[in-house]
Image (cartoon, rainbow, N blue to C red; front, top):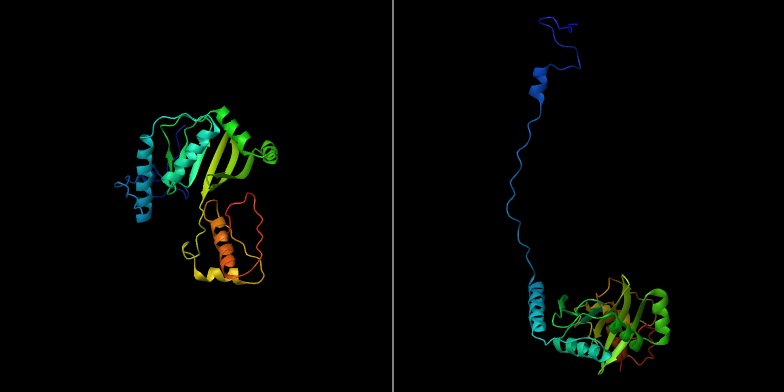
Length: 239
């Protein structure tokens, strides 16, 4: 049957559109905007200096003679290296070459062999006390202090995907002052109070322990007091 057609001179019922109106109201697709090249990231002078130091350390690591890391003595050789290069951290993990951290940049020691499972187990057995071994067995991680030739390190041993990993952070012998840490002088006033509760909080590696050590050293140098610290592991040593 024929469809009804609106009489000539009349409009279509409200709510309906003729084919011509639909075509006129169809939205025109917008042309894609052309984007220019991305703006290069501007690094601060400090970041550029750190990048340069890391690159030099990496180039230096390529000149090292190939060495195999299999014993505790080899770990001490790596520690000698990070002291010599002024690195802050040493990272060891099964099936990976050692890494050192210089100016916040991780640098692979590509000339060294990958750490083996037996080597990591040897380090675990020789560096952990019996109590720490029990803690590691139960929680799959343990924190301890390690000393080598008068230098102290904060160590963290843990499991990652069933692989033994070790991180060593160098603890400087000299405790920096509040001024050397570029902290406000008013912070020293907390160390001059007779009583109170002072919290230092923040992410890992941002200087909490160093800040507290600086405050304790302020007390140590200005007052005659008996100072007791509760730490696990013990990091800075006050003389």
